Image (cartoon, rainbow, N blue to C red; front, top):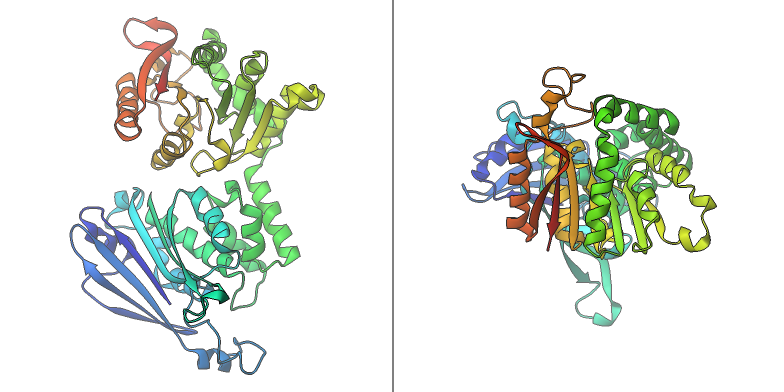
Length: 464
């Protein structure tokens, strides 16, 4: 079985640093079920490809008790040839440092998304193309899929369950390897070894940062753990517990308290909501998305305006959605009003067909909560795939922070902020969106403008 990983990042041979495997050497690694070979079919400055070739010993598997119970099937099966849990184990052993995100020689490279392509010549997909797309598209991958007939001589027999799959994305290598490590056995829906409690730990460790918010997380957990009900239940409970360390009420109070202590004197929250609703109304939008809806403040205002016939809030936190549902009193609305509003659980950095086709979207104080390396995924999800005609974005103006007496030194306004931009930085970001996706931007202040440092909140209205 074979896995090929390629990049056009320049110099492309930096892939050798990331994988901890020198492009000029062939290497072999002994594994319990065979030998893994690593080599580079091409290693140029503009294109570099690393191949992991796994030579499984089927006779050795039978001798070690890892074959099927059926006598003939012990020796005649697809295990040596198709991407399966054997390949996941090889990735974990051979690319251990890359899977952990370690690159001492180039630490900046390990945390930077680069153009990557992964090719799996033979993938057993128990669920077909639909499952394959449902697993990888939400993670931001473009897929190229080639089907194979069961027997070319007899086309009436239909297609085999095997596919050739190519994945492409701008991503960190660590993320690509983690996705492959978990999802290859999910596609195969089986494993070559016994499943125990340790497998839950392994799944949650390699699924950290993406599995909890994946639209197919329950199916992924079930397949990865071979539908072992106690283990599946344990894994899902731990995912929920990790996402929800506090109760909804505690989380709501904490989130409100942190930023409110800084911004409340200016009534910034109310001013932001009013400004965003005004722009959404002026755009003529009827179907509106609230991206990162949190506790539903914007939705609460939109519900009162008959112009908006469909209002959808999306958030990665189950807790926030529970608080929003309670705050909006969805269970008490009339059927007509209730049909206008939906709350969806999902990530802003994973492709999601549920948010396609809307007239407008708003991201109110959202982008600064994203890690910088995830921001490009957000851009593609919203501006390339969903493509609403109007997108309203607000974010803190970092220059204004000096006007907050309660904000010490260079601290951010909220402890969960990953960055805060100056006006020039925000303008540069929207200019990049125009260049890449065709959205033009109008920049507007929210609240009074300070003559030296500008407004406390900056807003961009992006339009096609």
